[in-house]
Length: 592
Image 1 (spheres, rainbow, N blue to C red):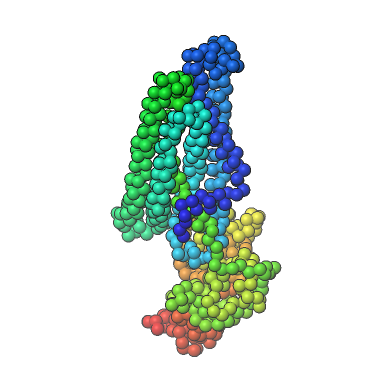
Image 2 (image 1 turned 120 degrees about the vertical axis):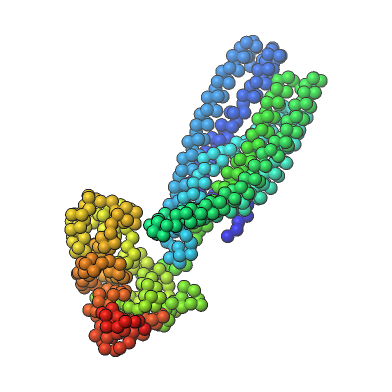
């Protein structure tokens, strides 16, 4: 999505509506700090005026003696420096705290919204790209709010305050000092528009680097096993080089800003210095006023050279702001239902269900299946037959393309998704454990569970013994990222314990024993046999021995239901299931 040059700031202002009072307070401190910062050059002019004119000076109308005038100037100077320091402290406190607050809220709001998005959204982007938006881009905005916003306000304050003083003191010279400002503003706007697409590319390339790094760190074992370290260094180098090149293009343009502006500023400063000097020599301008003009001209024009750096920081921040707010503004395509069932029994029916990730390639085709409440139903079939897609539809990660799915007679699309998923337990072959303790991972679905409840769940899952006897700190053992410190069988049993503790009325077992050894499989199968009692269970399995006692077995092929029955009925039928059974039991030597 493309935005006008001012659009990111407008979007940020709308997002931060609750902090506008804090923004105004911080802005007022920035303005006051700059006003007091501009006072010393004026006091220098007054001091020169006092020394030169003495009894005829500006301060003589308040204090007669020149010595007393200088003492009064000293007191005023001290007070001004105190207030300048005070307001510098205050703007620093307010802007930095505001930056931290908005950074925190934006990251949390964006992450909260990300969690609400459809699974399709995640499958279309890399985790590194999402991480870049939630972390790097938010940090970039925080860096701008820390200092950049104050710098822009103080430049604006400088121009307005000095303009008022100049046209009050010496209007015949003031126009020369301000002559470069329209050129500077025009140049700044021009550079801003030229820099915007370049920094958008910089943020995109930063996301690419994050994506490659996140992917490689997650697959380090695979990289090492294939001795692909050198190749992956080249891949990271290529992504980093792209980021470097994008930055070079932006830097080449942004770096030219300050030197060009400095030349324009020099012309205005020189004109003021010479013409104002001539007026002073001719008696048309007081020496004190001329001193103020010279000092303030420098204070007016030289800070404008920092506009390049400030706009550079601004453009980086706005490019990042667009990326984060684009994530925040993304809305789920799946609309949540409104019915919140207290307790599902688990009577599931699929009526003429079709589904396609891509319109041209349907995955499920006119599928009709009934799963009676409190029964065990198995779904089998070759890879690519649509089994895993069926699970995603039941969890409502996706909506059906055609047909309907009902639970206890209620359309799945009408149920509130949080309530639906809270009553479904999933035990998958791809077990995900969070970084934390064994206890925390088992209690993930019920964080308020007592130690006794967690231990009971672990015992049912046949995990208690290895947790207590084999792990160094028992239930307090840290499992590592994704549970990497545990074996596959141990991770699977903790996953089952997690499902036991959740105690859902509907249970889905997706290849729960496919990647463990025979002994571990037997232990897991025993715990699963206890788990499925008195609940609706759907089992996805390749090992047919694990589902031979299911109440009903449905065989899928190419997205269609091709066979249904009990184990004995399907073996006698002599179809796909029968062949698969003979292959797995050693009675056949080839698949269909």
